[in-house]
Image (tube, rainbow, N blue to C red; front, side, top):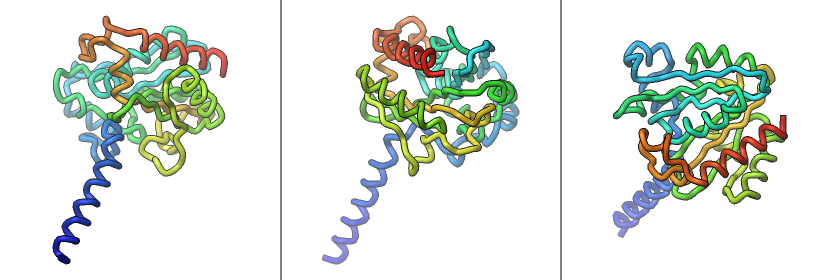
Length: 233
């Protein structure tokens, strides 16, 4: 009987651990990244396997997507749409397989152009993705007042959003070492968008299909963000 209870308790612990971790599967920590900084990445990956896209404007906000392309699908397209009216930094994996290898967690993301651009702007809106099981958005970052306002705006427009609090450091976006917080004011908003919601923004969620298959959900979502940016800064 004692042996049975021990096995049952262990099994329960494992199940609870899986349930706790799985929603954040797309959000890697530095310990799970293949490379610990951009220098390592650039030394081991062909330059043709990734792309950096930038656009500088007088906008007070930099749209920042460090895990675009095949790393966290859909964040590239959202960033490019928002970048039509704002400054933009986008790092994309162009690999057909193994895009996850190019993931650098935000506290270790030190690509030179990114560091230079972030330092020029007062505010950063960073876009990320996580696996999740439902259509959902975690809103984090150091600019707590605006993050709260954006959370409310998203919910009002039918996008389930939750203002993330301390205790979820991997997605909270409040670490001073997070590149998004190395701007002139130290103020940022970080969005973690679940895969089910990102998938709903495209008829085809493949790397090639996303660019030409945006749905009304995509345009409603980016319109909410564009309105927020234009009226909040």
